[in-house]
Image 1: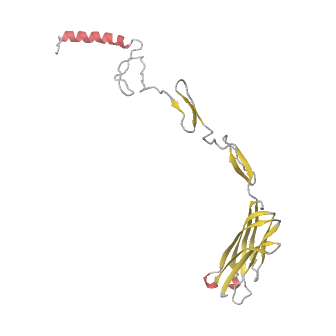
Image 2 (image 1 turned 90 degrees about the vertical axis):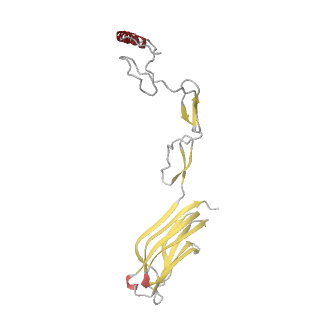
Image 3 (image 1 turned 135 degrees about the vertical axis):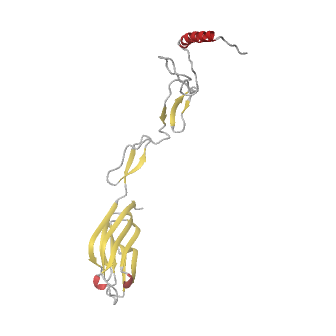
Length: 243
């Protein structure tokens, strides 16, 4: 049913409502112009606050894997459970030969001495003996070692017209002249004459010994080229105590 008000009566009704609505809206605790989202249906009256209503309350916080704490009421907090999660490492083993052997729950480290390393290096250019001869040695205390000897060879300028070339090396332990590894290289001089030889061996020394590298080029043989060696390196890493 539609009710038609005379024009003068409609204007009077709007005037009355415009006077009483602000009074209703201004009552303490009254919420008006409610709308979905973050903006009211209309602009709030001067001096009134915009109120946001949440979709619900948190009823509990549960600590998941790697966390501790939580709760179902009041103020709750979470913390990292260091029995499951490693704390930031706060120490190091930066002293010479140091190594990290263990990291505690608190991040503190336990240090241990790393393996002993013995090293020899020779540079410059040296003649290679026609027969096998000593080119370098490294003194070692008792223990078990991984030894690596590496040396570079190149043909002498005066031997480029020879027919062939060959170099060889032996890794020995003295005293006792114990041969532990052999390496060699060779070929025709017209396709290049240079080589890098490497000798690798694990030895177990019951007493102080000397690791020696012996090399030769067979240059006293007719048609064989003479060689020079450079950049000799001998290293020994201690793997553990002698058994």
